[in-house]
Structures are given as C-alpha cells and as structure tokens.
Image (cartoon, rainbow, N blue to C red; front, side, top):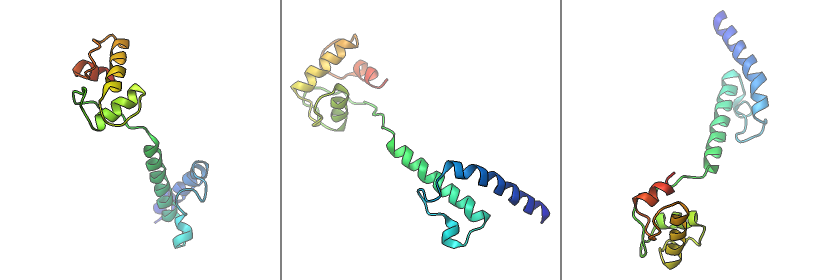
Length: 129
C-alpha cells in the first residue's frame, strides 16, 4: 500500500509540474475532474485525452503527399489529374486537356525530361520525389 501511495505521489508531482505547461486548463477537452469529481487517475485520463485530441488536430493540418501511379495523358480524367494540375500550378478541373499538356511539357523540360506531355514512369518518378 505504501509503494502505491509513493508511486501515485511521484506521478502527481511529475504531471502537476509538466502538464500545466503543455495544456491550458480549458483547452480541447474539459477536465475530467470537473466531470466526475477528480483524482489522480482522472487527471491522467484527461491528459491522455488532451494529447490524443491535439495529435489528431495536428495530423489534420498536415498536407497529404499524393503518389502518382497512373500514366496521365491528354484525355485522362480523375483525382491524379487534379493533383497533377495542382503541382503544375494550373486550374485543377480533373480533365487533362491542352492547358495541362502544355504545362506538363514545360515541367518536363525544366526537369531535364523529354517534353512529350505524357506523365509516364520517368515523369511520375520526378513528381513522386
């Protein structure tokens, strides 16, 4: 019993000195101690909930890297065309037309590739870097 008390006391000291510096009292999740009466376990659960919520919020803000897997050429349509158009800095409508082809040729030449206007394996390798 004495060991459990000392462990609980040590945890309380550690978390009471670290947690306030990391989280504001009313941030993300309302504290459990206000919901259910408190205690060390409630404090630890609250800190875990706050950390999980903060990690999810941070992950949602990170841009997603698109992996180009299909050969894209004039007439292609879909999500990969939209992502290609974004990389090329042109209006992203999902339809590979003359503007996309011209922008792709310019991109290919700028990267030392053959400017054929087709996003084949070599162009995709550069796009996927």
